Each structure stands twice: as C-alpha cells, then as structure tokens.
Image (cartoon, rainbow, N blue to C red; front, side, top):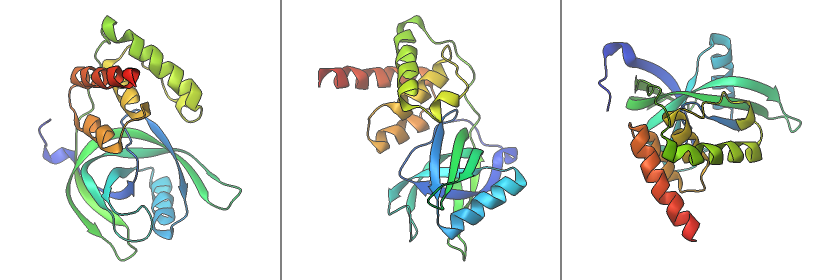
Amino acid sequence: MQAVTEETILEIPIFPLHTVLFPGGAIPLRIFEPRYLDMIGGCLRNGTGFGICLISEGKETGGDAQIFEYGTIGDISYWQQLPDGLLGVTVRGRQRFKLISSEVREDKLTVAKVALIPNELAMKLPQRFVSYADMVSEMMEEMGHPYTTLPKQFDDAGWVSNRLAELLPIALVQKQYFLQLDDPMERLERLGAILSELEKD
C-alpha cells in the first residue's frame, strides 16, 4: 500500500452504495434522499467530489450503513432532473482512498476523514492480455451510457483491469477485493483466473 502523507488527507462526504466505483469508471445514480440531494448540491456549488464506498452491512436508504474502509472519490460529470422528479447524476471515479475516521451528522450524512491513495502509474498492457481489452471494449458498447463516453485507455494495464473488474458479473465483495489491489498485473492475473472459471460454466 502506498505511504500516506499529511498532504493526502481529506474530509469528504460519503455515499454508501451496493456498488463499487473504480478510478476511471462511471456509475449513474438516482438521488432522492434529502441528505444526498444536499450533498450533491454542495458538490456542484463547490466543484468537489464525494466518496463512494461499498456497503458491508445495511441498506442504501434510511439508517446508517456499515461500509468497507476502501472507496473511491467520485466527481459529478453530468446531472439532470428526471421525469419522475428524481435527480439523475453520472459520477466518474477519480482516486481511491482509505477511511481514517467518520461521523454521522445530524442530517444523517456520513462525513469521513480519508487518506488518498495515489493513482496507478500508466503501464503498457502486455500482449497476452490484449484480448481482455477487446472484451472490455465490447462490454462497454453493450452497456451504453455512461461507459461509451468514458476516456478510453485500452493500452493501459491499470485501466483495462479496472474496467474488467467493474464490468464482469462477479460478486461485489470480489469487486471490492480488486479495488483494494495495488498491482495492475496481479489484478489482471487474478481476473484471468476468474474468466477461466466463468468460461467453464
């Protein structure tokens, strides 16, 4: 794990979800709870992001959810008022973080002090994994928006491994495991083992 320095500490609002956001990825959200509507409004006004963490126990709505200690800061790339009155938001993953401490405020919004984890350096995708890049390209086309609008880096091992981890039909705890891995090559190797198992089924 990368060393944490004082400059990498931030305080950010946290959005617990039953999903895993990876750096360079994107997720669409439908916002209706007042605490998160206020959070989104604040982020838009200040040009800041918020943390997305996978829920380990609990629900997305209502009470306080327990979350994994690693998550990703998301930036709002697009928002619109939906026909059903809800707020539609597209969030892009910027950078991973580790929770240091958190508190639930009176409005039920969780705010956490987090240590940022430096983004992975670009690493050329080895030839033996080029088929994974092709697979990612096909899945992104099938998924449509917001994946088709993402900047593409099909020759980068980290980017390809992150997209593969988020798009493969695997358990959320497995996705969380891959989010916490620091080595793109290890991520690709382990994803390859999962792909081999999926192909047998």
